[in-house]
Length: 575
Image (cartoon, rainbow, N blue to C red):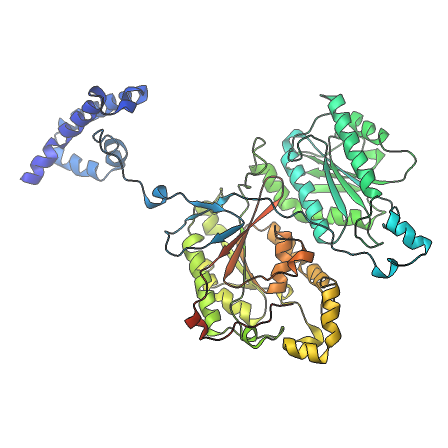
């Protein structure tokens, strides 16, 4: 009886509470909002109609369990009553930053992967060094190399890559320019990126048809900077071909001829035009070698592109990047900020295998299994993905239930036991135990030094240590691999990661991670080889709208001493 009486007067209490909030000044925001006053009027009408209903008790039960009660009546509480925010509302979510520490005590999904704060990625530098035997030579060839103008290969002329786009495809074209420069520098080639605008981060450029004077000034600046670069002497070998990538408006016939008129007539260059558009480019196609890109068709046409191996590599890279460029064309708005994270791009996760038996024994390579501590490492990595990634709505901006059902996650690892056994717990969390193993993700091969300890290498092959210290990137173990060999082996994996629709976790080895992370926002290869990739660490790569990778390093809590059984972690820092 008391319960029925309470529910009987509930509508009157709600009506009076709302009325007091409006009339007595308890809720000033209501007075200032015409919409809220109208909402109150409609609410009062509905409540009175509800009271007059013949089936009062049945309707009351339905109302208390309906969205009407939750979304309409509950917000109209007494003016002095405030809704208690949720845990995630009380504590602001963490945005990605270059260095972070995972905190198991915080609530789930505490990281916002769609925003990044901190410095931009390391700029890629060339990794091919000039021949040391020519430094002290007095031959004319060596003198010319030191002065400049001779360091590049004379098999081909310096190359101009001119990238143009119509208004609708400028974001994709700008992304391609940055990615191309980044990829070629990672591959050891010499490439310079110039933008015909006062704002280097702009994707919309001065148009020749709209403001020819500004267009002319910016194009001349880019051409002069390119010529200075061609005549400079960076630390490269003689086989390198200098390439200048210029992002400028050369879409119309007038801008095309005006650009070529500004090039010096006493020098020879190889010029390739890349035209981005929704449809195929049809103007002045007979005048030069070109690549026409139709993002609506997700295809390209190339003509007269022979004469340079470098140009062929550019076309091949564009073909590999086409799925991502098409996604940018479809999903990315034109009015976004340069540092905004791509809305469709799923983060790429990297982690190193857990502690292995060879880590404790100070041995190179081989196929050892995990220690007990290594298995705990794998379990804690899986725990991170369960709490921060699996159901995180801020994993990427366009995450939907359909994506979870049809695309989801993938876990990649090498064919070696220590990565497979590290990946297994995470695969149970993310992919129901499914793992993709790649031979190309195997650790760098140490050749005759495989399975040897650091001390054994020093005693048996003392010259190997000195050779590696001289050029760690280019040094190849006898019957083994160098970092340059490893980069070539990882090239297909890298391109597949960039275009991957699933969210991928890569479980790999230290040398492999050094090489991969140097492309995905880490330090250049020549610096990365001298730093460690610690265990119990997760790296996350996202991209901004310019095509620049941003890398966040998330450290798990340190391994407790009892987990290691008091054993040393091994002095060998790796490769």
